[in-house]
Image 1 (spheres, rainbow, N blue to C red):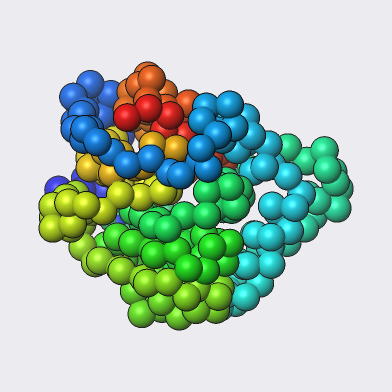
Image 2 (image 1 turned 120 degrees about the vertical axis):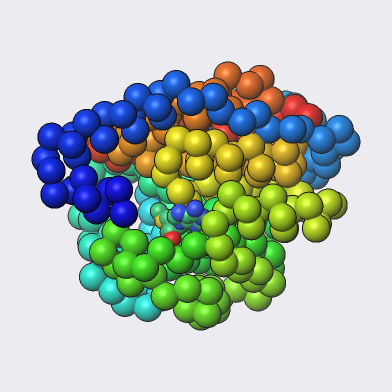
Length: 278
Ligand SMILES: C[S@@+](CC[C@H](N)C(=O)[O-])C[C@H]1O[C@@H](n2cnc3c(N)ncnc32)[C@H](O)[C@@H]1O
């Protein structure tokens, strides 16, 4: 209502956006409450020497093999212009730069992480049409997928049909595990669901839902304590919305539980981190 009225007055619109951005810069962020006795991913008894490093994750995320895999998964999903464009761009990059192409996206990062981790449980906040979840499902068909979304209509001007559609996409990707898709605002659905599943921990987590600084921080604060030691957390859109960097830096990079890797290029980018400590 306020936004609708302000949209009609240009100077008020600018002032409103400025006030919001200032508020986002200074607003205090919630802190994750970590849990004693958090389980670790089975590393086959090799310990720290063989653990997945941030550079290894990044190297796999930019590799041609990973891009080929992602293109293959996307080609199995319901065709839509946006998806076809993504495949076209990836094919063009591979053709032009070959193995030298240093480029990663949320999809290639998740593909690489799924390859190394073979997740039992994957949590995604912000699922939309299920592209990321489909990549995880294709790499690890037996994984159990937990997705939370508000299914905002026509998100980025593309139909956002909801959980039944996403279930269908997961099947197209070859998924055979369980898919639990919860509708509603993640700031309330995620903590409520996790409170009802106190023993549930995740091997991989993607935070890609609400893009306000406080909303994203709440998603991190709720989800991070449920990431297994050795697990990976992924985050999209850092450069697109630089204020979100504050959340990533504060809640992940500045915490010695995590080692992180980032790919940034112009207005694109993705970040991932491995939990190395309880
Ligand atoms: C960037 S898209 C997710 C893309 C998806 N991770 C992928 O890779 O295909 C963001 C999604 O977050 C959802 N979303 C936005 N605000 C939300 C909120 N407060 N709670 C839950 N989901 C939300 C939108 O409906 C949208 O589907």
